[in-house]
Every structure is written in structure tokens, then in C-alpha cells.
Length: 236
Image (cartoon, rainbow, N blue to C red):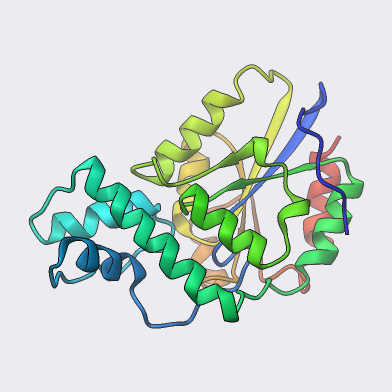
């Protein structure tokens, strides 16, 4: 297993920012709507959920559910909803951790040899993201100084923007985002960032291609050589 990354990026740095659900880890196929359950529990209501949340941030999903039910949540209510979400996540993963996506560990080990820093860019809140990554035994592969979470991001565009702003002082930093949804692709494209789309989540290879990502992969095993050819060039 790779050692934990150093806290500081080198002068000439290359940063690969990974989404979690569907990209690092297999999608949880449970039919449970956790965000809706958390809202209904905290507010003692029986709201209806939303149909499509792929690529949305935790904050975005919670606000959208409330909006669709003619409600605007206060910051305090949102904080309680997030605590319930975290409790649900801990309970679900305590006996059944999420599975890593196919060929993830060999890919991460190969990437570390290229001196590329693995970071995180996810719609999950910070606590939920760490719970998932820790449960899957992946903490040591990522530098959490370069981790960007969806707990305070109203959408993925905002999340990517804040990432760019925080890295502004690193003038020679190149970034690539890797994710499994059209929202990942659109957010990266808006800010001129390269994006690898991987069809290991809810969207097919053909669907992802329509959004013109920099690179499209079926999965990390089938297209391992394609990924590494891109990353060897990226690492230069």
C-alpha cells in the first residue's frame, strides 16, 4: 500500500481529483433515499424525494428536496440533517463497507509512481466522505489537504470554483478531475479543467461521451492502459 502523501505539493505539481460514489467506490444499490429520510426524520414530515441526484452535492440534494416540498431549510436544520445523514452512513457501512471499483488499487499504485497527487472532489459532505473512504481502506492513498467536499457547496460548479480558488497560489499546478456523471464533466469544462469520465456509476459510456470529456473510460481495468497513457503525459 502506498504511504500517505506529503502535505505540500511540489513546485511543479500534478493533481488528480477523484469523485467518490461511482468513481472510487461502487454505487450503493440500496433503494433507501438517505437524504429524504434525514429530512423527514429531522423535520418530522413526510416529504417526497427527487428523481435524479447523480453528481449533485449533499447540500444541493437536501435543498432541492426541501424546495420541491415548498420549504426552505435554515442553517441549523441543515446541520441536523447532515448529522442524521452521517449516522445513516455509519450504520450502513458498519457491517457492509462499500466495495472499491474494479482495479482501483492497481491504478492508484501506478499513479503514485508518476508522482501525481491524488486528491478528492466529491458531492459528499466532509464527514460522509471520510467515513466512506476510511471504511473502504483508502485513506492512505489520498492527500486530504487537497480535498473538496459538497457539504457547503450549493452545486458542483461552485465546488470546482472553490477548488480552483484555493489552488490559485500554486501557479504551476495542473488539475484533472475524474468522475462518473455529466455534472462532473460540465463543471470541469466551465473552468477549462481536463476531466476523465468513467462509466462505473449510473451513466453509461455512451451517455458520458455525449458531454465531450477529455477522456472516457469504461472502467479502470478495461481501459487501464488508456488511463496511464493520459496520466504519463499529464505528469510531464
